Image (tube, rainbow, N blue to C red):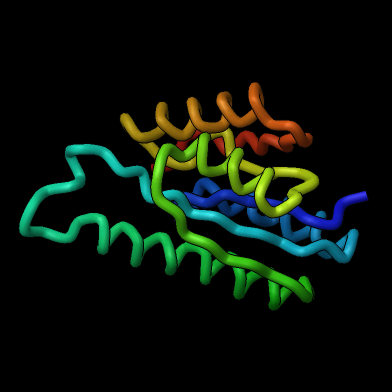
Length: 143
């Protein structure tokens, strides 16, 4: 039923439950698990002379590497980890199309404070526009 499962991550503890569900689905169906971190580029994080995007890319790479290691430890044979840059919902939807994803598993909230609203809007946008099923895992607010 599922050959390809995507779990976007923001690296927060709040996404752990969504990752657990995605790993379980991938393991159960022998599917490839894809994990994606999107570096959101805005004018505020593109300061000349500094490299804030580099730090965010590094954090994103660490986040997807942790998901990949967790999946491999759980017995998932094929894992693909990616970091992209752009508008999160758009990047997730493009990844679904480009990689033949069959189901996306994502948290309804992973961040706290103002960024929590951002992730909620990402999940909402993905659900509204996704050509494949989206499993939303309600993880609530994290500290």
